[in-house]
Amino acid sequence: MSSMEPVWRTATRSNTNGGECVEVADNLPGVVLVRDSKDRAGGTLAFDRHAWRAFVTATRTT
Image (tube, rainbow, N blue to C red; front, side, top):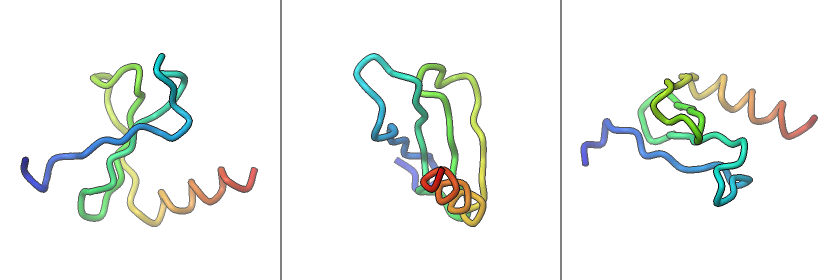
């Protein structure tokens, strides 16, 4: 596998039915990719690492 291919991991709150969760690929340089675990072919969102950290921090505190 190329180091430039995303390695996806499922959110920790996902269940065996898919739940309403996302998958994250954070192995690429400078970018974090996010996609719907129920619609993997439906596209991805891309965040720079700073924006992703800010988003995660904000969601943990609310």
